[in-house]
Image (cartoon, rainbow, N blue to C red; front, side):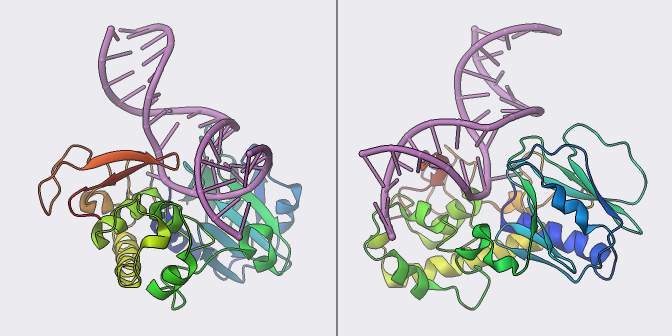
Length: 269
DNA sequence: ATGGTCCCCTGACCGC
DNA sequence: TGCGGTCAGGGGACCA
């Protein structure tokens, strides 16, 4: 469920509680996540938090001897609890802090909690990731250069974390629509000029979504339990059969690479 | 290397 | 109210 804006919203919500704090302990109730939660995460107890950051859709809590790395998968969320509350089903673990508890919930169990030895960036899950879409290193020239000769659909291409991180299914559809690029077009057959427009669109949609606290379609909520408000700004995602806001043509839905894609056949070429 | 396909898992929703 | 089918915002693993 969470894409980059939702993960960023979560990081911004938990960071003030973590920064400058010492971890009380990490209480794991259910180790069954994408990978079994390693016992090593409990070594976080008593360690000072040196930093909290996001890399792609991973949340990194940097401690003295290593980092806790959290991924929210499709249905994960972190909540800040300032009063004691009985853990419920699917609430796999708690990070206990002096002034609150950060509680992880993940019904579908596609998320993860791992312990990373330094340097964290050498971890297999992080070392081959592409640039952050909101960073200087990302732009149309990068997309254009990487895509030469690639026959995969451009939508699939921009969702590949080795190309650029954090562009999930919702925002891929949105950005392609904004840039007027057909999602099924071969990545290698998109011009440099159109990649420039696509890069701008990716950046723009992600920044606006972050400002709205992410997109809540069904069950996403931020660390304070609040929904994201970007759903009301979606231009194509989830609008199959409804008229395109630019030309009135019915928005098409098609499965590309196992995921639903939404686009306008008239406005996107 | 690249490009398909499959799958992990639970819950919500829809039609009958 | 119950039941079966379908669909979800991610992404690793595997095969050709």
